[in-house]
Image (cartoon, rainbow, N blue to C red):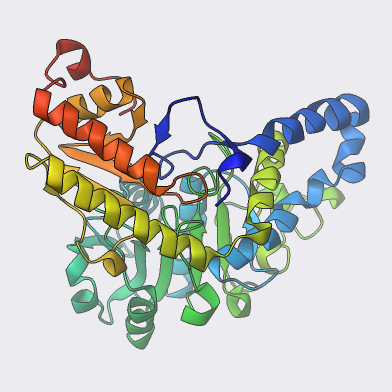
Length: 396
């Protein structure tokens, strides 16, 4: 689709865009311009003259169509963990009479860590009796009752790729009086998301995976417009103040989504995100989804033909998974390292998951077939069975 818009090292087949997207060719020049043409020349005046101050909202509006959100309902900034905290804290305050945060065992651990930490901070004397309830992904709907304040889910399971039915679960949560909070880290830029149509109250996501904005790229937060003026930001930073440059001693939240800004936005990372979003100007997310299914179906077929030692861990039905495919194998880490040594980049998730992302912007069928062939050779020859491939690095 857009392979010539990205930089990939010669000979590399990159199946890890679900962890970190490759660099758009335009990103380096855009960041260079921001450094040399703006920061160097404009210094502090760049906040006005180069528009840095307004970029979190401008980029939020550019990203909004990719998650089915309306203009003015998304803002960029901070890390995904911080945005999870913001959204969850605001959601809990909208349901003060309830005490359960409902999530599932397929949620990304940081979301659960944030919930645990927030409970400790908000409920130190246990008067609120806040609880985090974690159930199996298939059981979420059965546990939505009148005790649940917030249903907090990641739409696509980071290990298996299992895809939650956002519309159905949001409806079920709201029918039971709960708030719906969705983490779109593995959805945004991978498949169509319909936040406004689903009526979800909150959503968060990152921009360094399928949106290709680079390591450490800022996260985003969505708040449904009808509650945006009542959602209380627990992290009340000066950029979320209604008049930040009045330097009032007391916090007064800005209107609507602007109140979900916190501190100084990362200008250089926003420049990379701006360049990355250019790629989407003439790309249909529906086309991306259809192509990613074609690629992943091909990969499953080719791998199962060549690698009987591997067990499919993702849902077999393409409509039930995101844009990734996972297999299990006891020595999965070593297999991934052997693959990387052969120029095929996937990743590993403990305890035994080999994970592969399918991003049609820069992958095609030839890449997928070749990757499966190389994986098959590694499994047949057991070339993964070397000490060097079993030595765990800090990042897996």
